[in-house]
Image (cartoon, rainbow, N blue to C red; front, side, top):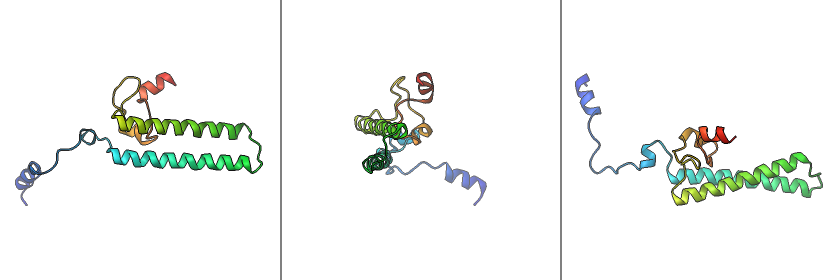
Length: 125
């Protein structure tokens, strides 16, 4: 194919029957289904951690400071995950709770339940 034909072919518009991209996908954001799957995976992981910690305590191990800290971290992560599900349902998922700007996709990748953008997170600690 000649270079001119290749340029023309690559510049051709999409067929009229192609659906318009969803705004969040057009901005590089994952779709709601993908986000929901990632959040469910995170929740299941934290629930498994919580069960393991509870079993360790029930097995007679002392509830030392490390177990207490781990249990608290898992509880906070589960609360954050549930809040992310609520934001997904009400359409605010991916928006910074502090400044309202979109949270970059890379920041939402880990953890997918991030509430704030990087600058706001750095300000609040």
